[in-house]
Each structure stands twice: as structure tokens, then as C-alpha cells.
Length: 214
Image (cartoon, rainbow, N blue to C red; front, side, top):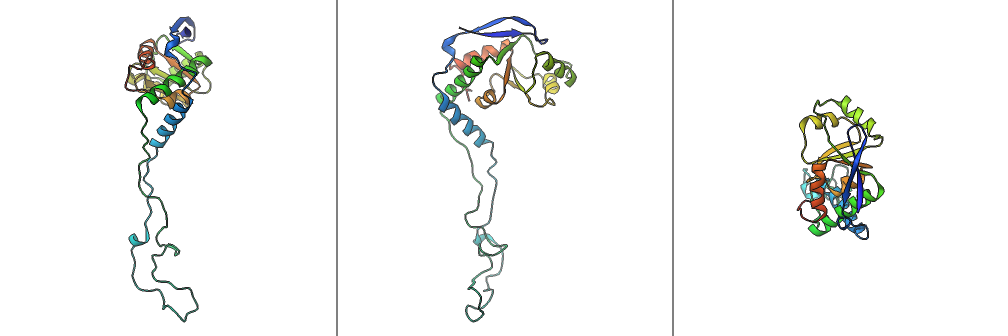
């Protein structure tokens, strides 16, 4: 059994949350994490870079100068890639960077990434995430009490508008839901705080009973 510390919003200990060892996976999954993170970052790329090939460049079809007798290199058209303002040879064109990840690979990646954070002791259960006033000042006070210095990921079962408002302007802090959190977020944030309601959803995901596991 793995124990996660339960703390309140003031950072005071309030017991332990027991997580069954069969829900965690450290022995395998490193490659799965790599594949999922690469696919996620690739999916963020717009893929909108676009250049014109020579046939797409507007311009006259007349020869710039006669073929022989000028002492200059032969030139047939001004749209040539070797000319300034001409087409681009082997340039980028709009494309999709989407990479398909099998569901079981995504589930394994999430389980391994979460297990590594649990083993490192950086996952804690937050008894309640109450920032209903929507004030950034209150969020900063909470982070100070929790001793968060280099960013943190807060996971709840659903996003409260006022809580989001309080946290969204704090650098290095992200609020997400247990159903939407993905492997990249688990990997990139140094500390993770999860509410009990969100932990119930995370437990189901670790057991492989959710379609959202990337």
C-alpha cells in the first residue's frame, strides 16, 4: 500500500490516503510515457507553415534574357527557386502532426507517470480546494501555506469558475479535472494536489476503467 498525505488548505496534515499497490506501475511504461508526451507535444503544433513552389508564384512567363551571348547564366523564368522572390524548393506545407496512441499505451503511460510522482512523494491529497472568493491574493496565501515554490498542478473533479479565476494568474500553477489531466501535465509539474473527489476518478483511471488516460 502507498500512502498519500492528506492536508488542508493551510498545509496542516489531516491523515493519509491509502492507494493500493496494484494500481501503480513503475517496472514498465517509460517508453509509453515518451510516446504519449511526444504525441501530445506534436498535437500542439499548428502545422500551418506554408510556402509557394515555383508553379504557384505569380509572374511573367517571359525569359529574363536571351539564352546565349550575355555572359550570364541561363535563366528560363523568374519564379525559379534560385531567384529572390521565386518559389521555395522543399519548403513546408500545411500538414497535421497528429500521432495516434493506442488506448492501452496511454493508460500505461498515465499509470507509470503517476506512480513515479507517488514514489517521489510529490502527490498529496488536498482536503478541500476552496477559493470561492476568486481572489489571486487568497490563492497566493494558499500556495505559501502549502510551501509551493516552483509550480504545482491542482486536480479537482470539476472546475469551479471562482477557483479558476483565483489561480489562473499565478505563474506555474494549473487547475484541471481528474478526467482531463494527462501524462504530460503529470510529468511537467513538480507537485500535484488532488481533492478526494478527484482522487476517486484518478483511482478508476489507474485501474483502467476510463477512456481518458493520456
